[in-house]
Image 1: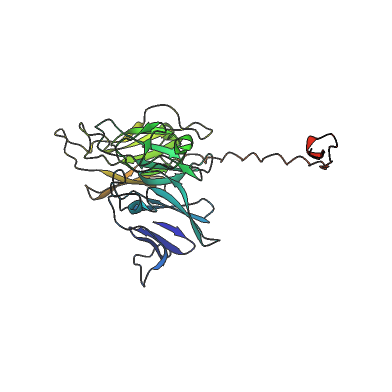
Image 2: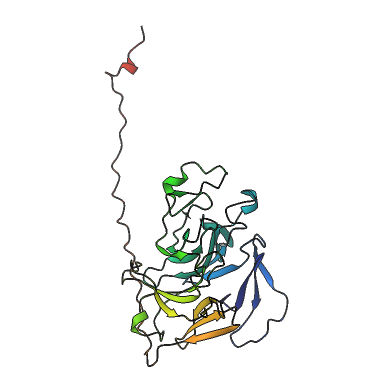
Length: 321
């Protein structure tokens, strides 16, 4: 869900709809207005939304219908991708593709760029393929279903690969572990009350997966970034754990993360059926993070006049024998 200019936008599995809404309402009266259609159902039916910082563009994540396009490419049309809706131009386009199941999205407060967490493919064993956190530039391609982690071919896929695709497939920025099922993503921002340990970086809800033994995920972790907005090459730090009992049974599975207006981290748990509120005792609200200013490109140099002159000595100007 996102709120924009008096309307609440909700991502159903088959479309994005909205209602008139003001903070404080407890009901949604009337019929929803449809903004756009989405490919329905599938193995990954959840659709998630993120609003650009300027409020002019909406980003919609759509997961694949199968594990590795098992039912052919036609069945995967407009899937395994992130879409962008422009409110000014009333236009939608695919923003990035080749992402088996993108979920949580947020904007890096240092750079303003879109980042996302992605669930990778199954059935290659307990240690493949790592789920990941990555930036998402316009036009990015991450390889699904043909490849993963930029250079590894999934030889199970018997579908024609786009020509030259391996030359432009991107490598994800950060591996989160195989089959940890990351869902929620929220960058730390000014005003949060999580303390100095979690000042710069991203909180990620790892839901855990059936497809791994021993189990992994079932927690909330923090991935650190430097002051330039780059992810640091360090293991994720645990934030919220204890969702597995000693017998490996889950009595909670973190699903989504977001910040309350008082700075607390909110974590939804779809097994416990609760929302957890997390703060660091005694922590003061974090200072605001200033976005790094863009460096404009230098102006184009003035073009000199081009004079085309015939070369009388050229063999092309000599009469043919």
